[in-house]
Image 1 (cartoon, rainbow, N blue to C red):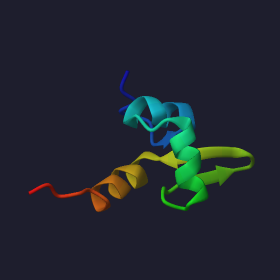
Image 2: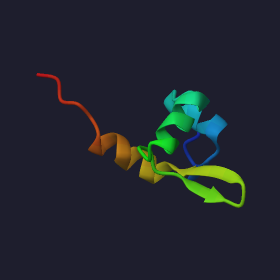
Image 3: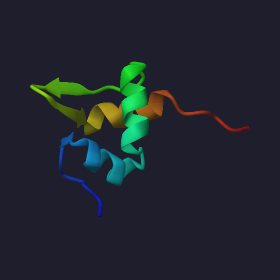
Image 4: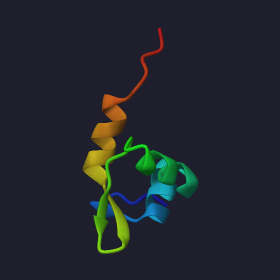
Length: 62
């Protein structure tokens, strides 16, 4: 299932859409590697920020 029209994703939705497990998300958040927002006690990811982060961190294969 693709979550095309949602701008804010839960950790479960991010795992489903991009394939990052929740444990990987936790590791990346603790290392401040991935953009996220904390709303009260909830973690949310802004889809446009994740897309930009992925583009900015891609590895060019020669």
